[in-house]
Length: 496
Image (cartoon, rainbow, N blue to C red; front, side):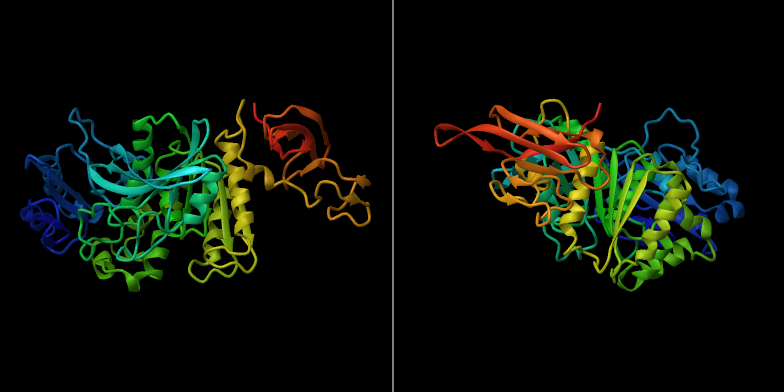
């Protein structure tokens, strides 16, 4: 059995019970953030009893005794101010490996022992010229979690991009669902792409807590699984993956998961993309989708409301800890999003700017919760952002053809170009077009751009025009015979 608040319910995994602790701490229905007792495999009892400050004031000695007497390592209740990290008592005992957070706060998540391990390439789902797609599994604090991993073809190691999907009914969810377009696109750009299924989804183990009894946790359990996926890849040390350079993209609920990790585990990833993310305030998300939550009533019994217990909801909100973020952020939202209000992203952007964070906010007129017309632009900007911050462009690296073609102008090889009628304006060239042109992308400066070959043929001519782009003519081998031809070249940012 496991205990939660003043309720006792069967656990799917741990046949232990601690009713006395619940009755003692909660004799008058006083709030408990979370009280749970778990058994490890050899049936030793691991107990976590956490009281709100309200309960501590009512019975401080009793709460302290319970905390010191029944936990494997003592835990100090949350501080009055929602500062991270949560201050803890010194203890020589090893920190318990929790399969679910014993306290509903980002401060606790920041201090939890996370253990990602046993990454396994279970089977090959697809092989194409650009990448191999694997069904994978790994351990997240002991739970078996499934997912997919795309590894590009060619010489690595390839920087890693972690994807966090939005809400999909677990009964309908299938392996790797939610961001399949993004998985494919990013792998074709030279990134290893990992997409976790979260606990309770696809082939993953369920949460050790029952949905109908567990209060809303603002995605903390999912955040554990996402962070542990990165740790599992690092532990596996796959030669094709550079797991020290990691980007993270989250859509909708996955945006909330991404923010949780960014504020509580700064430095775990190098760059963050938020795609129509949920609110950075936990109370906003809880109230908007309360009707579809099994735990709605239970949440208010345990956590109270924003009006009665604002400090509890602040500790569960990434908004409270945005000052601790270190990662650059690229934020996207559509103006016609009917699922997640764009105002939430506007507020997040304003707060990040106020705090002096590195953030760029892109809005798409007319786009809804999942981009359609502007999706290609969204992915181009995302690719460039990750390439910059994950150091994708490095000595000896040759980007895939798809990356080059994104920059090709609309002037085909061999056509007659007139300045007045050229498809690219303003035009600086008149005559027959005998090269492959590349343009500067928005935001790039001339000194950041050069021209590089995209095949192994010798370069016949190479040049670039300040503020315009590059042109390259290359000698290639076609059908066994050498000839001079144009080849897609790359106009890319260069980094020291």
